[in-house]
Image: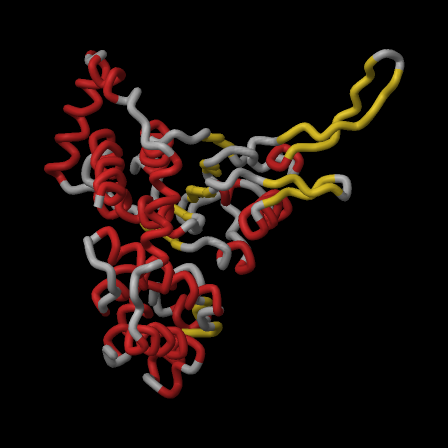
Length: 323
């Protein structure tokens, strides 16, 4: 119970710095608890970077920010071997790149070409970096949080499917409402004058609390009926013609096995956050959009008709019977 209180407190403290984005904050916590990577998408200025920085500020973890640009090189992320001379002798030593931290903020990840984006692949999947034939382990607490601008914007390179699949969740961030906008103005104004806010931020949640929470989440019960429901949702994306004619027209490629694993993990974390030790269909439905939307490959017909991944997932949830 104490561990859940700690995690809830972390969410509240992040919320003190972010107004009108409660859903994004909850999903950041779900990603942290599920030991997965997050892709956060939204227009510039919607507090994506601020939210991730706020999490790092309130967690006893090292944050590394990488600004992705068209001229970035893979070695700028992973690190490289550097030649050192000492006492007349020279040798190559590995110099760690910014990826060797607990929380990696990959800012505007789709501003860089595919070769640079793929430099994150091994780190995200294997939790290690291989340079010059030697593997270098990453920290136990390791999470990549990539932000991207909407694909339609000029100067962006869409992420390849292989990399998208490695993100546990794809979080979409929308504009806050009018009331929240007024609160944002007041919050920023108060931050400019208040010194008290700095004193609060000195208290940080220990990494051990996150590992304890993950252990408790692994014990959350998933009944066979819920397992069948998760599998049915995934199978609906692979064989849509068995379910609905429109779905068959919209979906080109369905969800991979990583989607099954991801939905199971995030559903358990969601149930735990809500104070339960078992998963309900509500937990699955609350998280299925974030787990599925970036894994679905939509057909030309769907794109031409303006059908979004969210609408496709909505239809799947409507059509698949709750176990």
